[in-house]
Length: 125
Image 1 (cartoon, rainbow, N blue to C red):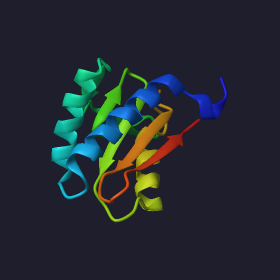
Image 2 (image 1 turned 120 degrees about the horizontal axis):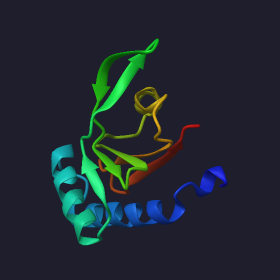
Image 3 (image 1 turned 90 degrees about the vertical axis):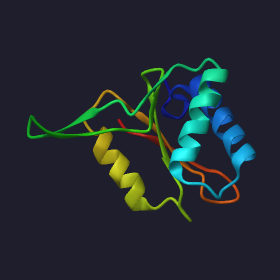
């Protein structure tokens, strides 16, 4: 499968749900509000997900902690919600270190904090 086409149909559905949430709520709320709205939208669209499922952080073969992404969609795609002026390289790097060494290869880093929703599609191989 081509890198850019990773879970193409699933990400198309997720992005549609994200746009709907942003269209309804705008860019003025806290992350938890967008999180709760996305739960409703994913359920309405029959998109399977789990919220804040712990992913182990491993250092030299030893578990040293865990990361709880906002959503894992269909056990394939991580969705991480932010409310910021801009998605920074630091935010992208942080997500990379969370998923490094896990089975998850695709992250949608979503920013609801601007007039136009920002979605970074990050592929880690």
